[in-house]
Length: 207
Image (cartoon, rainbow, N blue to C red):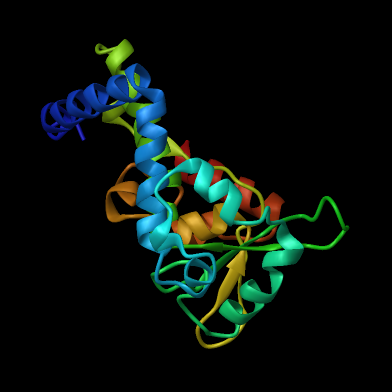
């Protein structure tokens, strides 16, 4: 990673510029995200039902789209889990994050799109490194690996098209190649369900 550090540092500098712009124009940034989401979802069943393509202002959205909760979205989610697509999002959904269940004592299955992973979870991780390196440029953070410790990483298959697990398991299973390069332990250890054995194996490969 030391060889790659100059190139990565340059990319990080560009990202810091964008983050600073977000901070300088927070309302405009949120409106851009709002319009992008509407544009992406306007051709889904949910988007057509509430005419996303004709919504241009936040107030119009609040007036036109009823407040949703998990129970109201559950029929869509169950259909997606059965293999239907383009119901809530415009790209294929095959992964679901299983929650521990808080409001009704039942687990919830949250659809996870590739865009959600790339533009939210993975980007957040990259931004943490970016801001840390920006504030501490002499750090050796880019010369080593990150230790990934999570809860249960067991992945379960619902059918031929759908899988579910803890969010950490979903993220690990779909981690980009560059993420695999800078994390430890290897996936076979990280996905072990037996906690004590996993800790022992993690200690073995990292010490």
